[in-house]
Image 1 (cartoon, rainbow, N blue to C red):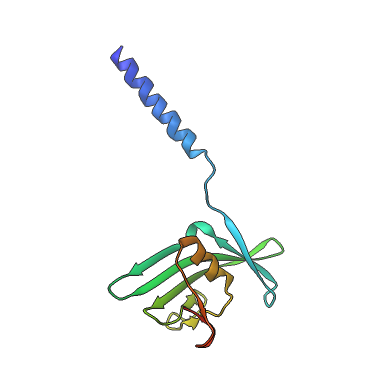
Image 2 (cartoon, rainbow, N blue to C red):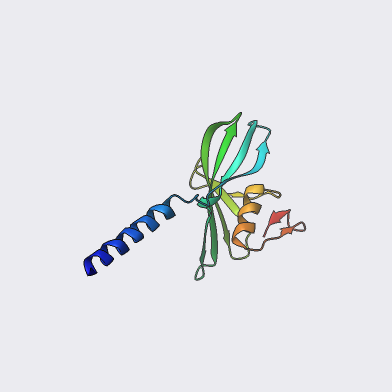
Length: 134
C-alpha cells in the first residue's frame, strides 16, 4: 500500500511538471519602431532585456536583442548594449559596430526608452547640454 502511494505521488508530480511545461511562455516580440531608411520594422525580444549596475564603478548597462523585419521576413537580429558611467550621458553599441566604439543615444530612441520603462530605471533628456539622455 505504501509503495502504491509513493508511485501515485510520483505520477502526480510528473503530470504536474509536464502540464507546467505546456503553459504558454511569457516571451514576446514587441514592435517599437519602423526605420524608414531600411524600410524595416524593429521588434524587441522582450525576454532578452537584462540590466546590470556595477556600484563600485558606477556603471549601468542594459542589453537587449532586437529583430529587424521587412515584409514579415526576418532580416537580422541585432544585439544592443546601452551603458552609462556616473553622470555621463547614455551611450550604446550594437554587435554590428566595432566593439571599441560607442555612440551617444539620441532622443527619442524607442528601443532605449522601452527597455528603461521595463526595468524601471529613470532617465531624462537634458536640452541645455546637447539633447542627450542622462
